[in-house]
Image (cartoon, rainbow, N blue to C red; front, side, top):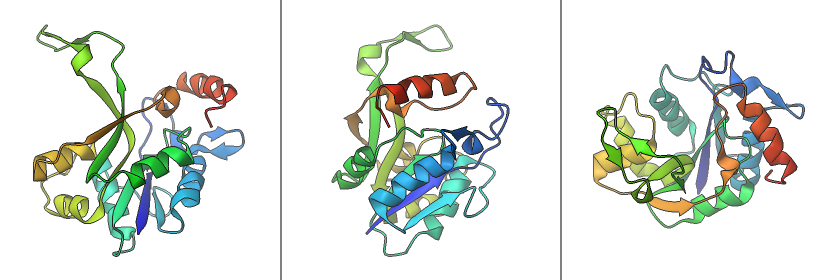
Length: 196
């Protein structure tokens, strides 16, 4: 059984407002993502920040969402309202991936440098994106351990708790994240290119 958690909490400080409620073509971002999750997964879908109150951190919101899903769930996908151009096919690709931890990625296009001035080889690096999909019971057990109160990425939870490396799936630019107001114009341009 598949399950989906749509993360639609957060204060949106950099966006200067709760971006999950920003309307794109007449629909709030959270609803755009939730509708695609429902289409791919069905009713075992929860929207944290709408169906129930979100947590103080991303991790708390994920935990709330995991506990709201059917206990018979076998695989769960985590989506963000801030990435509204995700497609049903991308959701299904992750859900059908046979690995315990799966993430979309894109190669880095900018030079990467550590804060101490050490340069990194961008050809050896990926940018991790959401959505991501996981073995439901394993992710829930890892979070229920209490060891991960404030993580920015669940593949790291799976790595630190079990030593499970994520399976990488390269994808396209449609998974751009809305962080700032200017990102809305990027979304609109991508929609013109039939990414939705």
